[in-house]
Image 1 (tube, rainbow, N blue to C red):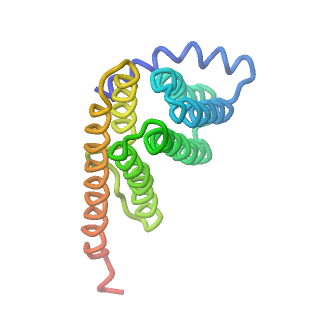
Image 2 (cartoon, rainbow, N blue to C red):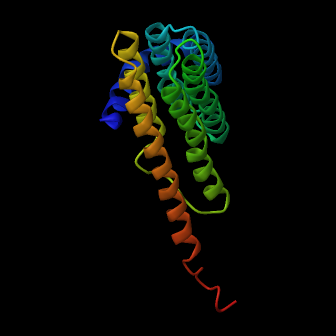
Length: 208
């Protein structure tokens, strides 16, 4: 479903990307602006209890993940720097989203279970991409798993919006619990991938 959605967003964003490029806007500028808006919205709206408003703003600007990629491809600027910048700033955005929920529920939101699970998601959400990056730094792969970034964002934003609309906080607590477990499982899955690859003999090693 998410792959189909990305395809639809690419088609929708192509005219916007072409217009921005004609105006001299760079893909990096879109990436940085989108991240700044998400971070500010998450760390202002969520800790002050504006869950629905925060979610709507964040959801709108999270879409810049697709827009900057479309712009880079249309301009022929796709490369390692853009990928590095995008991935690094994604960590800030994710941390701000879960961090905002931690601040709200440890504060005026007064729900220790939701706050604790949001904190667990924040921590585990940083370990998941680190496991992949570290594996790739060692010449191996550790992608995939049951809880990739897009899945985590969609679920937490939908649940937060529903609570902002008046549903009980239990809805978000359950989703955060499931995300924490899924993230932990994903980390274990990636560790297992690296373990299997590290035990595979390197061709020609014995002869050397």
